[in-house]
Image (cartoon, rainbow, N blue to C red):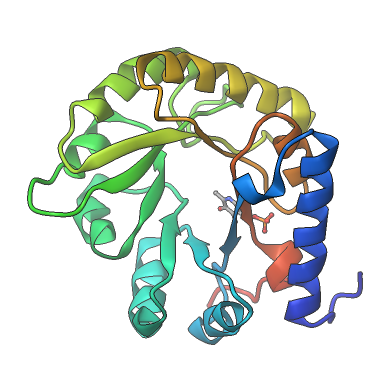
Length: 227
Ligand SMILES: *Cc1c(COP(=O)(O)O)cnc(C)c1O
């Protein structure tokens, strides 16, 4: 695919790839949610995507997400916060986000507690790399953290999320995430979503049960340099 293929074409190509992977996995493509990660790109791109029918968009930095969500508030999009989040920004993220994919520690969960706001969807982020300093809870900590989310007003536990570690075989990594998902579902049967799969590995994620795909560059094109 050429680097300057128009946005509509890249979106259609990815959606066809998602449908193919779903069929290969014996799954219904209609049960998958494709989130377009628009980080580094201007709000005008979000508007173009919305005109093409995109409803779910993702960002990984609070300031950028907040600004774009405000600039495109008229579109009624679902904003997914997918990056590491400092606890002191948690309440601000609540104001525009529909879901947060990076619940990875008690302090962040506690900071998102609210009794006066609509429930925010939360995914537990699981670190599959085993390297310290990465975002994400350890697989062994998943059930404990899930219980904390279940006790937190204003948060609705919907599932788990992970990024495949660099250099690892993605399908094997996503298989481990699926095992974590099964353990979490034994505590919270409704938390059946799996947020996994990016531009380079969404087919592997779909084979391992991903329900929410977070796709950036394959749709948006190369990211501009961050100023
Ligand atoms: C940037 C990002 C993505 C999208 O990555 P691409 O490789 O551009 O598809 C997905 N998930 C997270 C957490 C990201 O930060």
